Each structure stands twice: as C-alpha cells, then as structure tokens.
Amino acid sequence: MQDLKDIALNDFGAYDGTYKVPKDGSVGWYSFALIPDYAPMQLSPMRVLVADFTPASFHVTSELNGTRFHAGDNLEVDTLAHLHSGGPYADAGARVTVMLVASGFSPSNPDLQGFSFDTFAYGGGNSQQLFQTEEKLNDQGELKTDFKLAANNGLFGRLAVESAVRDDRGKYIAGVTGADYFGRDRYVGLKEDAWLLQQGKNATVHYAVVDDQGKIQAGTAVNIVVKRMVTKAARVKSAGDVYLVHYTTSWTQVAQSSAN
Image (cartoon, rainbow, N blue to C red):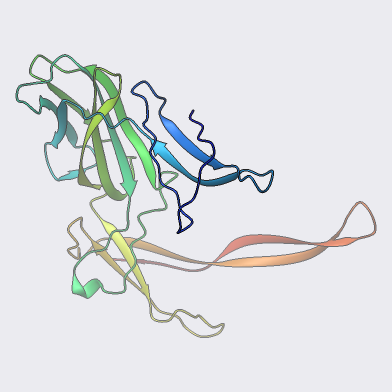
C-alpha cells in the first residue's frame, strides 16, 4: 500500500506518477483511490491486474495418431516437453485430458444444400470429458497415453486433447491439439419444402442418408416419424377462489414412413 498526499494537478488538470510493485507483492487486482480535499468522498478512477508472467523454461506439445476418429478407435496421445534451451524436461508430473465438443455436421456435398443433420441432441450436453489421467514424464520428457473411444460418446464433434505438464512452481504448462470425431457411420438429414405447415394441406419432408465423409448412401433403411405438439389449457381452481390457467403439452404422432 502506498499513500501520496498533497497532490497538485498541472495546468491541464492532470497528474502522473508511478508505483513499483514489490518483488514479493501479491498477485491480484490493485485499486487506486482518490480523496479530494473539497468533499468527504472517495473516488475509484482505475484498477489494474498484477499477474505472474514468469515464463516457463519449457514448452509442451501434444500429438495424436490421426486426424479422424470413430467410435471404437484407439486414441494415442504423445505428450512431449522440451526445454527452450534444448533437451528434455524430464520426470515431471503430467495430466492428459480429452474433451468432446459437439458440433453440427454439415457435408460439403452441394446436393445436400438445405438438409439439416442434428448431431447436438445426444449425450446430455455439447461438451463432455471423455478421459483424464495423471502420470509422470519419462527421462526423455515424453509420455504415451492411449484409450479406446466408447460407442456412446456422442454423434459428431471435435476432440480437444490437452497435455499439461507441471513446472517447478506447481503450475501447468499446456499444449493442445484436436481431431474430428464420428460417433456413427451413417447420418440422416431432413429438409422441408416450407417453413410453415397448414392444416388440411399435404406437407413434404425430404431425407438423405450419408456416411461420415458426406457421401450419399443409397439403400439404407430409414424410419421416419412425424409428431405434432399439442398444447391444452385448463382453468384450475386455486386454494382460494381464483382460477388459474394450467397448460399441458404432449406429442401426437401424425405420420410414419419406412423407406430405403
């Protein structure tokens, strides 16, 4: 903490000064306060964040055994830690984490323009942790990790692999890489002719089946079910004499079709 008293502004109504953060100072937010002599009040014109920017003596890289993975594949992660000056950063603690981030499947095939492939509504969220382990690097600053991708890990997304190595201060230095993940070998896309459907008029739904590279797969059996959400309102008497509107919703099947 530092106090400056009797500060005088220059002809432009300004003041400049310096504050040297001690070498053993705390990391965090530092606030500057002004107390004018014309009123019993405290002004807070600014605050700055002081952080520890001591660079690490080594860097970390993470490498995979491929760029595309499917359910059931074996994922191999090579963690490498090397000193900036050369040579391995050996025998340090390391943590390997694999995340799956769901994303939309959008084939580049121009024949599929307008088709929607829903690959998000699965697995209870758009991001899930698939694997994590903590081990030690060998004397060459390397660590090899492998595990099998389960079939229930999701439909489609991006694998985010982080290799983090602990330094002498107990902090982690990380390297990140990624790859595409395909949880299925077939994907179904739908397209409607109109965004508004009217009662009593026929509606058409187009479908397409593709593989993980977006190529159309003819002869694949598909079961299509069309449902309509029905909302009903009922006036329910409350504990007093007031009637409240209570809404209930349900899905009613209106069409079904099986095709190849």
